[in-house]
Image (cartoon, rainbow, N blue to C red):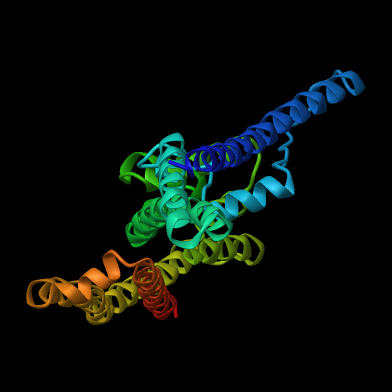
Length: 316
């Protein structure tokens, strides 16, 4: 009970940090809208005649962009959010508050408060990262079918713009929504390769960067577009198959990592039945609790390292 006021103060500080981040992001979006309106007003005052459509660039502050990149949250892709972002922030605040309360008892207030805040921030970051990775993987799995549909449409005699629009009706989600945005970019004056570069920036998929570069070069040099896209489609199919094979081969490493995490808890449960005195030293003694906490932290660090190595092997 003596730590209750400090615990409440730390929870309020954590909530203020999260709300401040949200405010900065919202303020950046509002400032972007105001700048666009002012730009349009200046254009109307300077030249009342009809003008071609001009596309404004994003105007988020650098600090807001760094915060969004750190949390792995992209407000431009709301469909990737399985869990709404306010719920994720509330989960992060709850986990951070619980971490502050627990770690303050084990490590003291000086170390417990910043470590608890870090736990809450990392929890929200992991949820946002999981949602983004899940969405991008779904888009990645549909790339070969998307390129194949484009090739068939072009060979049937459709122009490139109509082939891209055909994807928005024939492909399932999430590719359908992403190419709807591509069509929207084309409708306001962007070229096909520029719209695909924006798709690459949203999803981080290298294959769409390949497609954008291929279309840009083909528009300048000429040649058979269907044959060019067919070669690109074959290369992308091989890349997707390679990634699937890498994930299958990484299953053994994931199983080993799972065993390394489960075995200490199984051994602790067996020891609690055989000789409860040894386990009581870690659950009732403050020094033992600190040692157990350090061990859990090192175990989590090892699990994250193995996960990072598996991801890097899959990307290579």
